[in-house]
Image 1 (cartoon, helix red, strand yellow):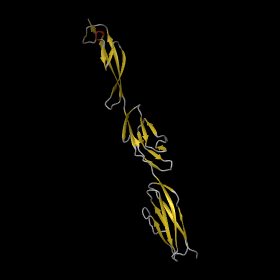
Image 2 (tube, one colour):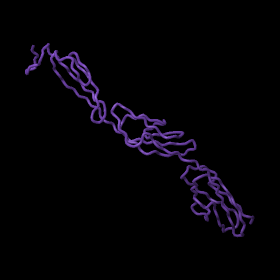
Image 3 (cartoon, one colour):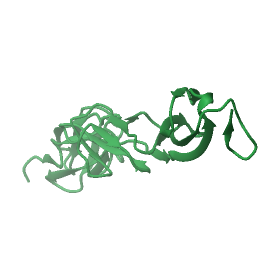
Image 4 (cartoon, one colour):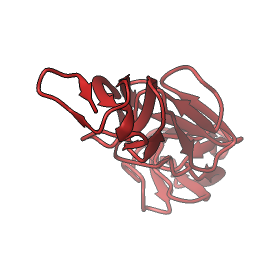
Length: 220
């Protein structure tokens, strides 16, 4: 038999950090063969013909094969490791907005984006209840998924009231508005959950008087 030789199957590839790849030593020579892989870190079994490697950075792996005649051969391959992006959303956590409003969710840096809504933009404008997350990818094909952001809508509210006054009482002040005549007026206030509350006043004015009597008429 000729002196042994060895080649590595599965090498010369690029991985994302945290991923693994299987390397297989294909030896030619006089069996049986013994194998020694290095470096021994981040490797499943350095004495096997087939190993799984988990490099944390770009690493050159070398296998040394010895056959039954003590002939020794080596082969090497480079596994390139590309970093995964850090996927996050700003603002984060649980977000409450008022009905009719929107919040812009912005993904962390990357080369492409895929939201669970199907959107592919870096920023997502949200105006509905729901849970939102995004997959951030790099040009090298590595990706990570963000934590989930929950958006809750708070209710706006409306209300109305009626008021009758004597003309002598005008002008009156209602919710910081000065009213000088009968009519329908509206004011925007803030309700108990911090959202706009639209209040309507129907104002009636009775004819001139100095006071309003108990039956609702104005008298001089």
